[in-house]
Amino acid sequence: MTLTVPLSVYAQRRAHLAAQLGDGGIAIVPTAPERMRNRDSDYAYRHDSYFHYLTGFTEPNAWLVLTADGRSTLWCQPKDMEREIWDGYRLGPEAAVAALGVDEAYSVAELDQRLPRLLENRACVWYPFATHSGLAARVEGWLAPVRARVRYGALCPARQADLCLLLDEMRLVKDAHELALMRHAAQISARAHVRAMQHCAQALRAGQEVREYHLEAELLHEFRRYGAQAPAYNSIVAAGANACVLHYRADRAPVGSNDLVLIDAGCEYDGYASDITRTFPAGGRFSGAQRALYELVLTSQEAAVAATKAGARFNAPHDATVAVLAQGLLDLGLLDKNQHGSAQDVIERRAYFRFYMHRTGHWLGMDVHDCGSYVEPGEIGAVQERKDPLSGETIKDRPSRILRPGMVLTIEPGLYVRAAADVPEAFHGLGIRIEDDAVVHAHGCELITRGVPVQADEIEALMRG
Ligand code: GLY
Ligand code: MN
Ligand code: MN
Image (cartoon, rainbow, N blue to C red; front, side, top):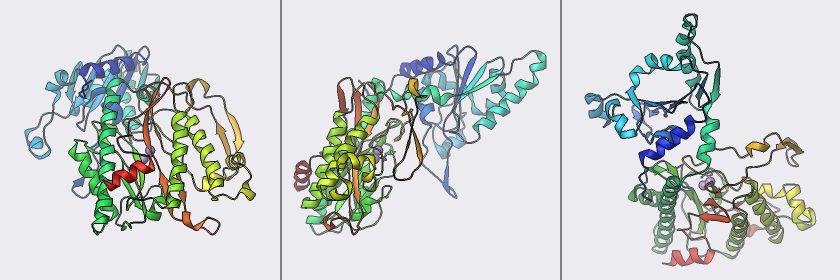
């Protein structure tokens, strides 16, 4: 399996999508806009994931139109010597047909002129709803000239439908090419975590100052060194109590030898994300309390991993995690046995929520929080209502997704202990999360991120090396 995705794979995806558009269906897929950061500086360009899934094309200002008969038309930036001197190479429509395997290609400057003709006499226009600002208005604009021609016998599409519904389902199960890219991204990210851990211990042993951004620099070095285009999301590098801030960014806090450091970082490689969290002792040795809490999170992750296999529900790893954490919080004295009784009480009253306030995973793919419904489509109407014991709100539980081979999800339990009078002091300010990326297989799951160790002893050994 090479990492280059053959053109035939994109053609197959387009054909599969076209077959679902229904008689007279037409789909419109824009790529992402370019975005300015400030004044003349723009953000690094990132294509739209749906568009890339169907074309493999990474230039901005491009559109794909697909019709139910399987024909695909691409609109892209025209060749322009002056713009190419400033901004770089453009494929151009003349070369696009052969380079991308589409049936036709035109300059994006012709989009407004050609699209109304393509929409004429179609039954349904599909496009991604609520994802591209202004797109619905743009479609309305293209339909107006079609409407004007109704008196001459033209048919104006009677329906509009959300293309995300079809593409999300397709993207939820990864094919072999996607899995190869995801394994590659995961391996690079694992190396980056190893490098940051080793740098941290070595620098502290040498008496050097270590700040959170120094560790972020080690991550970025490794991402780029192995050809990843960018971090898949903003890296979290949190020293000490900063780890209790769930969306903390790598900032400037000094890293002390006795701190735990939580790093949540993963690269994007050829459009696919990885997402790893490790928590390690900055100086290379866990204290007793740090190790006790770490082992609890790790045991809960092992329970979640065991619950991740085809046929199980998406919620099964979360429920397995919570069962272990609930008992562990009582055993370690973080929750008072006299007040809470059993682990079952802790779960029913959601008393663990104070220390574990996020879910155990999410889909992973082209987007770090990848698309795809968490509810099993055939059971969407099966609602069970319950009152949340903490907020009192009514929650509508729908049966969660049944896992299938090729789905990819993260498994990321954690515990975050803020200083409080009713919590043993040894645990104050400890924030621990352990996150791996799992490919669902028939009888279990494959953790593609274990290039970075997770056992406490192995982490200590790595940091001594
Ligand atoms: N890094 C984002 C997440 O773990 O969900
Ligand atoms: Mn995650
Ligand atoms: Mn993460």
